[in-house]
Length: 100
Image 1 (spheres, rainbow, N blue to C red):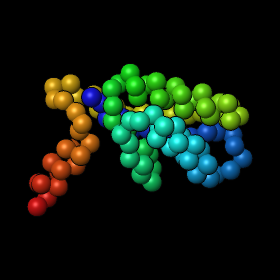
Image 2 (spheres, one colour):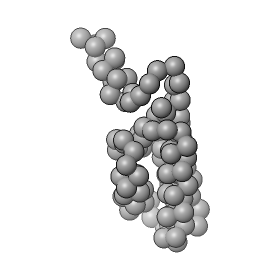
Image 3 (cartoon, rainbow, N blue to C red):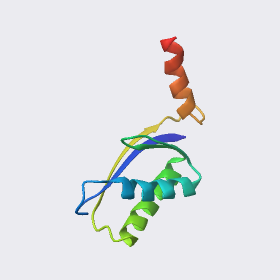
Image 4 (cartoon, rainbow, N blue to C red):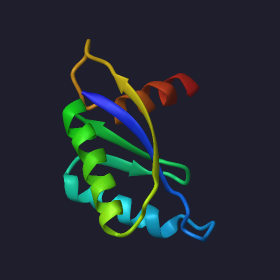
């Protein structure tokens, strides 16, 4: 199971605000059924790698359908295959345990 950090920015919108794009992307992520967490700078998604890539493609298709002509997406992937998932909570708990 993979964890991916996703940041999507649409360029040439005439505004410095990204909240409309973030909301549209977040709707697509939530509709996917994949586990996710929105943060101020990105969204973290957990799932099978092919499901994550398919979601990113759907996000791009949706944004293009909304009229965004240039979409820049940054993806960071942690694809750990030596342990079964889910892992987001386990990774956070491991650090929290060490802080105590």
